[in-house]
Image 1 (spheres, rainbow, N blue to C red):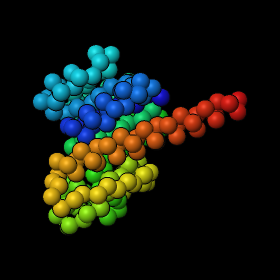
Image 2: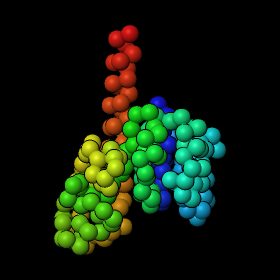
Image 3: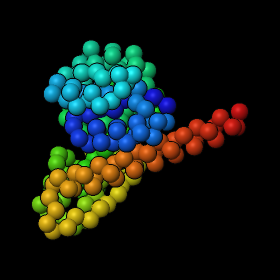
Image 4: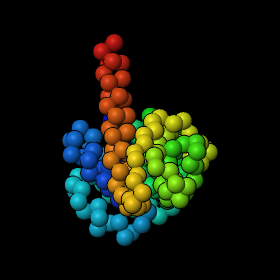
Length: 185
């Protein structure tokens, strides 16, 4: 199973580090759109392609992504909205790690908004991308408690741990389904 991870910062880096430690879920490549991330990506093996794409929806990006011939796109805090021509490229699915429980907390900065709204129970979602912003099929939602004195930094750390668990579970379930399919033949 090949997958590309689209990252913008700590969320993607944290989840990817944990997946790489499992050894069975090494990414085919990492896509990033801020040059300032390049140094942070040095923690990953040189065997993992690191590709800078300034505009995810450009013809150049579309060609590069098609040529990579991947199964899954994993979007982790990527700051650009994918057009249909891009999210239609992978063979299996495009997953987004969204920092809020959907559909309640659609849009930007959902972790912040949950804190502003006084939520003690904070949610995050794993969602399949479609044409509507944060409107795809919800694959998984998990919650954690945020105490009164805890801030957004702690919320992000807790959320990142849940994102890893959701992605790992999704990948594990996908592997099990593939094994069943292959055994039938």
